[in-house]
Length: 109
Image (cartoon, rainbow, N blue to C red; front, side, top):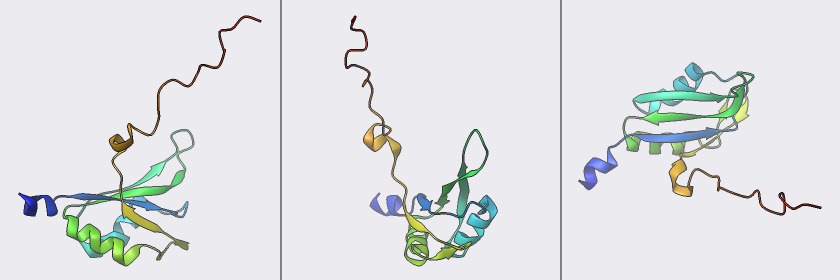
């Protein structure tokens, strides 16, 4: 079973991207390292402009590891990119905690 886990897909976080980098360009940069199931630039929902980061998912985890080693700190479209394993949002509860609106908001003066 451990061997099966090692061969599972792996998602990478790619940061410090140029505003001009496209999904296709991101895919092309990572394709030499293995089969990619998805390459996606994250865009601002209001403006449609790149937020400067994206995700690349490899079919095989060992290919993702090769891509991290080869591309982290390298130039893509004029920017030095950061590449590392994507962190699952659920590990920290989604990054946001509930509440936080106390502090006397309902006090009468």
